[in-house]
Amino acid sequence: MMLCLTRRLCSAAAVVVLIGAGSAAISEPTYGIAMYGDPALPPDFVSLPYANPDAPKGGEIRFGESGTFDSLNPFIVKGQAAAGVSLLTVETLMGRSYDEPFSLYGVLAESISTDDSRSYVEFTLREGAKFSDGSPVTPEDVLWSFEKLGTEGNPRYAAAWKKIATAEQTGERSVRFTFNVADRELPLILGLRPILKKAQWEGKDFTASSLEPVIGSGPYVVDKMEAGRYITYRKNPDWWARDLPFYRGQHNFDTVRYDYFGDGGVVFEAFKAGAITTYREGNAAKWLSNYDFPAVVSGDVVKSEIPHRRPSGIDGFVFNTRKPIFADWRVREALIQAFNFELVNTTITGGTQPRITSYFGNSILGLTPGAPAEGRVRDLLEPFRAELLPGALEGYAFPVSDGTEANRAGLRKATRLMEEAGWTVQDGVMKDASGTSFAFEILLATGADEKISIANIYVEALKRLGIAATVTTVDSAQYKERTTNYDFDMVDYIRSLSLSPGNEQTLYWGSAGVTEPGTRNWMGMNAPAAEAMIAKMVASPDQTEFVAATQALDRILTTGRYVIPFWYAEKSRIAHRKELRYPEKLPLYGDWLGFQPEVWWYQD
Image (tube, rainbow, N blue to C red):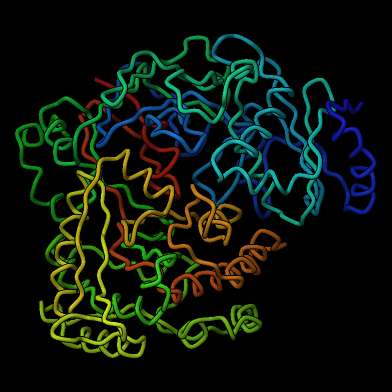
C-alpha cells in the first residue's frame, strides 16, 4: 500500500505508475547492490572479508588532529566540524564494502529493490533500528533527512536530491525514490545518505553551526568534548546494530578520542610522548629517518605499511581560474613547467615518492601518460574537440626536469608560454602589456609544514621568471572560510578518488561550483565535456563503457592544467602502539575509509 505524505508526493503517484510501466522488470528486494554485476558476498556472509569477527572489544584509540573545530554538525557548510561525528555517530541505509569497487549491503535498511534500468529505488528499514536515544528510525526520518540535506545541507547532497522526482512512504517500514533522469548510480548514492532524527531539529535552524551533538543511530555517542581541544566518543552499549553481520569485527573500541593541536609537528611530538596512540606518516623520508625514538626501539610502537589498489587521486597546488591571471591555459602550463618536481621530491621525500600522472592514475581508470586517445575514449571526446585543450586527444604528460635547481629547460618553456599569453619580463619583472606585474598568493593552513616547504621552493623558482608569489598561512577556520568562498589565488588541493567514481564528480568538477560556494570545484572549471563524461559514467550500462568514460574524463581534467600535482603514496604508513591491531586481510582500498578505526582493535 502506498502512503502519500505530502501533496507533492500524492500528485506524483501517477508519474510513478507511468515510469514503472515503461521500465524493465522490477527486481525482488535483496540484501545488497553493486554498481555493476552482483555483490561479491553471499546473503549469509558472516562479516566483511577484511574484518576480524573475533576481534576483542574494549580499549581506546586516540588520534591527533591539527587545527580546531567549532561544530558538531558535519552536514552543513558553516563551521568546522569535529572529526569522527559522521563516521561514528550517524548511520546510513546501507554500508560499503571497501574490498569491492562499489558494493553496498543493508544496514539501517534490511533490503533494497530497483528495476533493471534503476529508474527508482526502494528501501525497507530493518525492524529494531534505533537512534541513540532509543527512539525508532522511521520512514518519516528517512524522507525528512533526504529532503533536508538536499535543500539545506552541504552542496554535496543537492545534486542527487534534484534527480528525485518523487519520495514516498510505501509501507510501514519502506520508502521509495523515483528518479527524473537516467543515473544508474543513484540507488547506491542514496543508500549512503546519513539518516538524522527529524524530531531533534523541530524549531531549529539546520544550517546554523552548533555544538549540540547530532542524534544518530551509529555505534558511538559524543561523551566529552571541549571545542577546539578534544572530543571523545563512547561506544553505545545499546547500539541496535552490534550483532549485524556487516558490523561483526567493526567498531571494537570502547572509546575513540581526537585531540587537537596547533600543527602537524606538534601532533607528531604528542605521538612520540604517548599522548596519542596512532599516527599516519605522509612523508616517506621521515618514515625512514624520524622513527628511532625510544618507544619504537623498545617495540612499544609498531610501524605498519598498508598497500592499496586505488587511484592516486590528485594532490597539489590548484589554480583558481576565476582569477583573470589564471584564466589562460598557457599561463597554467607555464607555471606547471616552472614547478621543479624532481628537486622538490628529492628535497622533501628523498626522491622516494612517485609523481601523480593524472587524477585517476595508478588504476585502469587513468590515462596513459603521453599516449593519444584511442578507441572508445577517442569516440567520446571527438564531439568536444573544439573545446578540448592541447593534449586531450594527442597525449599529455607532466614535465620532467633534470633535478637541478636551475631547471633551465622548464623555465625556457615557461617563458615562451608566458610570452604567448601576453606576459614578458620587463626589468626583471613579469608584466603584461599594460605594465601590470604577475603576482599571486599561495594560501596554506597553519601547521601544513610539508606544503609550506614545497611552496617556498616553488616561490624561489618563480623568482627566476620575474613572478612574485607569496606564501600566506592562516588558521584552519580562516582556511575553511576562504576556500569555501573561493577567496584565494592558489591553494593546496587534495581529492581522493575511488575505483567507482560517479555523481560526486559533479560536485568536484561541475560548472555550478564556479559561483556556488562550498563545492569541491576549487579550480572553478567550467567544462561541458567533463560534465558529459560524468553523465556517461553514471548512465553506463556496463563496466567497459564506464571505464572509457572515466578515462576520457581523466584526460579532460589532466589537460585542463588546473593543478600542479605532487606525489602519491602507493601505500599508507601508520605508526601505532603495539596494543592496536588490525586484520591480516587488507581491503582493496587499503588504508582508506572503513579501515581505521573501524576494523582495528585493542589487545594487550
